[in-house]
Image (cartoon, rainbow, N blue to C red):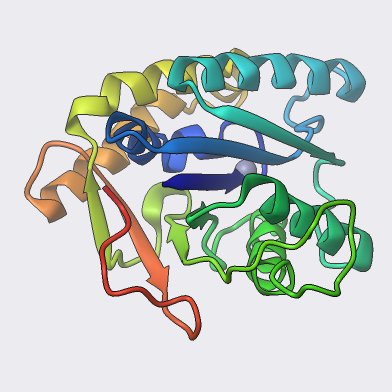
Length: 233
Ligand SMILES: [Zn+2]
């Protein structure tokens, strides 16, 4: 299968679903990691143009660990919202990646960019299948099954499916550790150890699922996105 994971910012995928992506790779899937924004606002001292370059390199390093293709959409950080130009970007994301299912943010997440990505992914997932909607790429004749990954710290989110990521927790950590600009900044300015934060949530979901470490998801079930089989590893 081909899996498309979409995060609003560089490091979101690593925090929220990289263990599952590693499990997908292990079973032979192709994985595409798409990052919507350039992450340029994610620091108090490094200026935006320089930071966007740093964060792209960090994201490339993380994708390399997994052997995933990176699609960098480059939307200005903090400005992801639904308009015609943005919708076309996300339509072409589907048309380029041709996924069998997608994983993206939950629509109850705290950050406006996360909710913007969710809405654009949900809407473009249908429109990309419409033949006479013309964009840069030819249409992708499928309405793709859709999973929400959990929000930061899992607040208010009840998973309907779990993925055992115990064999992949070290890979997930190494991918997250590629985002050094964020690790250091979060520690210095907010006192947050984001690797510990991620590991704690994975352990909490693991307890719920009866394994050491897990990630939780909700599948969005609307016609015509249904399938009879489990898609997650
Ligand atoms: Zn984010």
